[in-house]
Image 1: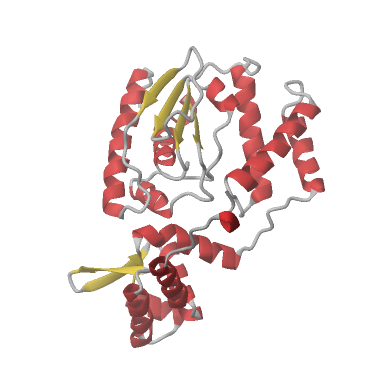
Image 2: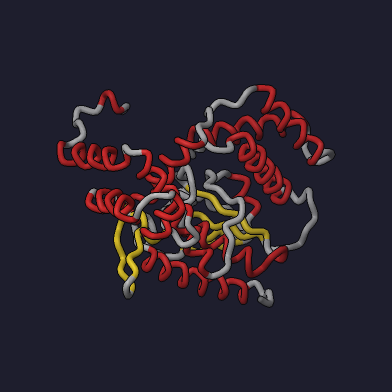
Length: 313
């Protein structure tokens, strides 16, 4: 059923809440402040720092952050004599997406010439492994999956090229066309924006080139949850150039271990693979303190997985 066919309109309370939040952001100074807070190393900032950077008085900045805090966009944390402001956990994704779209509007349509260029580059990379026709099919399908299923809007051409290349490599691995005898681990969650990104980043950091690590989502989000990036940064693990991507058949076929996290029966089952289900809380909407608990539990399980693979850390 399309939204126009839905007989139940948005309820009044929800509509009023959305309107208040939009009003709270409808000021250039507040947009600047939100951008600075979101992009700060630990996702929080002091009023004095914000005022100094923007060349404003502290009372002016305090006025704006108080309005955004009253409307639920910002949360206040007092530590000693310092008061830190951060974006409310359940609003982080909405705020960062709004800021990114304001700064970097990207069309969701890639020109045919760009797709042809991507196909040509990958044909050179996979020369002697796949035909140009197969590569062209994967490029165009990957573009559609990212644009329509995952809702990717930023860097769509470069992510299309990377997603197609990852899928082609997985296809080659599953068919034994590229000989590298290293374990292949696939992490799958619903959005590929939280748990599976935590696990894949930690395993990649620990194992390096000794394990091929992939991740995917049964219903991928448009971007990785910024709190996940912050939680990983705290322990010295980089998310790198990762992005949410749809679950596809060839990455499952290529995997030696398939580790699911709350995605139910979305992952196909093939013989000869080890399937594990890690029962972990979904970090969506949780504050950083609780995300740290999930991160640390994933870290423990990833290290145990390395021991099972008989790989020294």
